Length: 305
Image 1 (cartoon, rainbow, N blue to C red):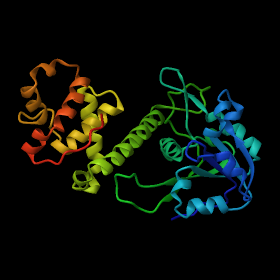
Image 2 (image 1 turned 30 degrees about the vertical axis):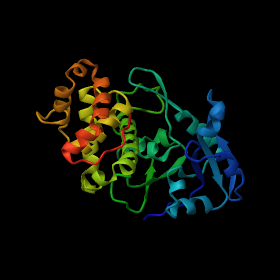
Image 3 (image 1 turned 60 degrees about the horizontal axis):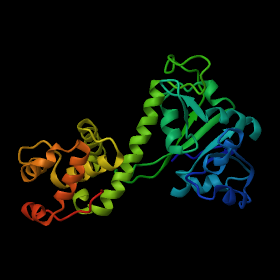
Image 4 (image 1 turned 180 degrees about the vertical axis):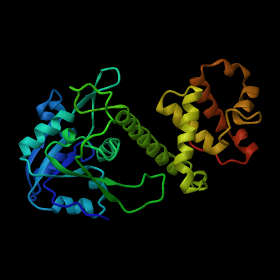
């Protein structure tokens, strides 16, 4: 893999690097340590936010480069000729952004998963004003847990003249966030949900999950999430129930004439009058009864409810 070069700073996500300040101050290969939230109204959460660290040597960068999952998922690496103070003054401008309706939102750019999606959304024309004093921003790229494992790579982002990805953003808006950037943040949210679902399926429905071809699992999860939300599932718990039922009972468990839902409504017609969300919970409980599982020859699974 391409190795990050000329690293001067690390940006650590305190939320993903527990006891961040204590651990960073105990290292002898770091110099200045600046929690960026200290400069904002979120100062009480300073240790959970992005923390800028000036490096005295390559120790921290080498550990992250050496496939240390705890690190490369917790930090990104920066190359800059600027002082730590000037760099932190620039980065603190990223803490919030304006959403589509003008509402202020936090941008968790300390999290490398967020940063990689966000910076990639500008394509090959990263706005020079966005990068400011940053020469290169190195972010790890790793496989999600539903895909085949692969070695991490380091994606290098450098400033270039921007072409129209953010033309719809007011000139005084910073950081510049257009539709592509907002879509990238939504993609991060879905990635994280899919990883949590994969963790659950690996723990509680491993046999059924392992029968699915690895190369198709990501798309299968996307399709099931779309189905669940189109049907009316509106919480993570409800979506998780839907995905688990799809895995055990088939993708058409809700629509097939002989599917799980049709059988349930014949078994308990009064419960079909429940709200859709309550129907899903009741259907999940019924699917785990011995009689239902025995009739299908399916091993009982643990409920998400």
